[in-house]
Image (cartoon, rainbow, N blue to C red):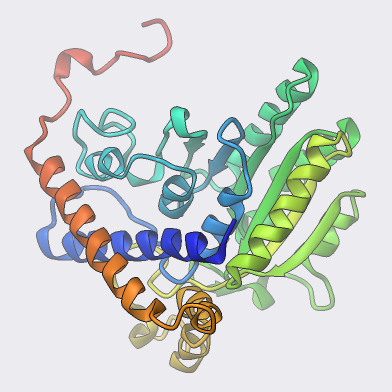
Length: 320
């Protein structure tokens, strides 16, 4: 895939999330926790662009970018944020429980590390059924400290399952740094290698590098070689949950935020294209206007949509 296409996808996610964040803060009509991926767009786009539509993606609480990168419907996502019947989960899941099976985005969950095991189970089904499909699960550095992470990697390695584990290492679990939580001299990639899994640490703000690493990892899985693991170094710009910035609260040093903003994945891809496409900045600005308008339209549609009917409260649950 061309870098231009990857850049366009990143701009769409950035623009949509910024519009949604402003509306969330100013209008107070989305009654759901929101975990934005502003600053982390290259991880979602680079990974999902390297997958096939039939491959299934699972995510955690910071899932908007993954959903959109895999082809999830924006209007259905925004309607879900508003709790409307037209939402991708019929207005019942909110921003942390997204799904679009037609696009291959299976599910996301707010339970830390839960989808690591679910993706492993999906990969087991693919392996047993002889399907040439790959399961992919996104999670943060904090989830790598959960027991389910180790249980899943062990099981996948033992049964040579076609699953790609994608750790978005943004250095923080809420406000706790990775250095404060994990022993010095160790790494998340090193732990994955301890299970005999093909593992690679990648610059998560370099969308081309993420794409190439995922393409190789997915091929490794499809060829029956077992699971693969990617640790993508990146950084979220906004607070852990919510539309605001948190450096003024002392959650993170301003200098650290500025360091990572200089390594903005959208800016880096734009600069990479400048030599072959001198007018790329104007193109990016046009994309930004287009996608902001798209997001504003999705919000307007969501506001006008009906809420779920009380009579359908139990529809789709066990026994119904």
